[in-house]
Image (cartoon, rainbow over all chains, first blue to last red; front, top):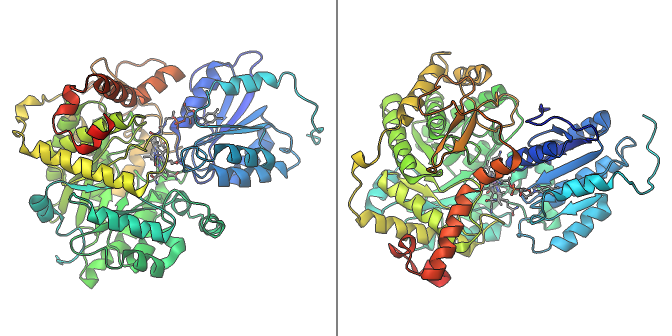
Length: 158
Length: 443
Ligand code: B12
């Protein structure tokens, strides 16, 4: 279900962003919106769509080697699905160091335990966790911060 | 036709008790699920019960569902297959019965395990469809979903051999929840009704989800009724179910109730049998039992108030071509193949049906809807659908992220604003007719 760009052209300094839901989540308006937003910022977006199995995401991520993976999920299972998924991405040499962020509605309680959840997801391996009320444009700031990356582990040979 | 079956007496109950109201309620803990069903049954409204299934069950990921239950992690619905028939029978025992039917709502493109599990647990009513539970819900190829739904319908229809009339509702009147103009919604739900009939079902409901404009919605439900009458074979026992708005929902309590009231009024004015409600928690989390009961009672009261008003003059609702558009789509699809399932698969391949903004790879994805200056949901572009010009479709232009979000938020924004304004004045027209205790409490 690789999608063509919805609208805009890629800017010269544009990044490649892999955008995806998690395996149990079929919501896609969030993905369509984020794809448009990221494209308008000049980035190239590959949108994997709804109900993406972990294996498919790991495979696409290994093949595409994006600058950033954005996981967006709102069905309330993001905490469980996200933690499992990031474990798989972090255990693959080719995706171990790829920046991966997650956002949306990650639990079913309306953000009641948001802080604990965010901490668990970061310690499971996410580079950043955005809550439901986060300004989506913050992904842009996160991408900009990648221009001055902190020293990270060398990426395994490609 | 057999007489038993929990949805069999629905029409009579509707006549006697008023609009039937039903939640989208599902909890992973069986004790909560049972308490929720009991509370819905007790609610002061003519209610139907619901078991809404969780997202793991919908994608057949029973391992994760089981692990989440073991870890005490709450799911977004009731894991019917994982809990097994004994647990589900215990959840329903003494609650489900002739006066209180219970329907399983899910969202699975491959429903075989779910249909088998609900039949084993003694249930006989569910929801879905080969298109409406595939394109907005999955990445399963439409051809596979169609084959699976055909087999599952036939298996479900076997309940009749045991003297039970199974009921199946098409979810086709929802497609993505928002931004899909009415003509296509109507065509898909009627075509799914034909598909259900072709695969043995005789007790069927067709759906329509409230959109952005009350008059347009009235015209749409009337069109659905006339097309269902024209296309469904005479031996079909069918009714119409209205869904309260399925898109991005108001954030204020008052705004949420205003949308719900408009949905109840739509259902009554158009003679629908059932209304599926939404709660004021919709915009941000899974609702509690109490929130579901509040929504059901509010909708029941709003429906009762509407029923005492003068029935609408049919001439009040102008014909803007919705029925003609839906009929054109239905006929174009049926012409593609004598088997309606195969016709549906071909129709999507050719783009004769094209759901706006649906990312599924079997959907062309060229059609686009927009909300016009008057607040009506219309075609900006119809892609390859054979309906250009009937109600619109010549306004092609590129939609950016902020315009999209603004369209998705139209219902949310307008109703939240209305609610905040009426909070200031407390005399708003919107809130004085049929105001219930619930919104007075909020006002
Ligand atoms: C439309 C809709 C649907 C449609 C989806 C169609 C489709 N293919 O997309 C349909 C009807 C099919 C549907 C189905 C279901 N839904 Co639904 N759905 C909605 C609804 C009404 C609107 C969502 C929407 O379109 N939003 C528009 C987009 C643009 O905004 P957004 O998703 O909110 O995302 C914003 C932010 O979260 C943020 N964001 C999102 N991701 C990210 C990522 C990053 C990195 C950042 C920075 C920001 C960010 O940016 C976006 C713009 O501001 C919401 C409730 C609501 N919001 O009103 C429920 C809702 C999301 N659904 C819900 C559920 C549970 C389901 C179901 C499981 C059924 C059920 N049990 O009720 C099934 C899902 C099946 C599955 N396998 O997952 C719940 C989730 C509960 C929770 N998390 O606590 C909600 C909240 C409703 C509710 N209160 O119960 N749904």
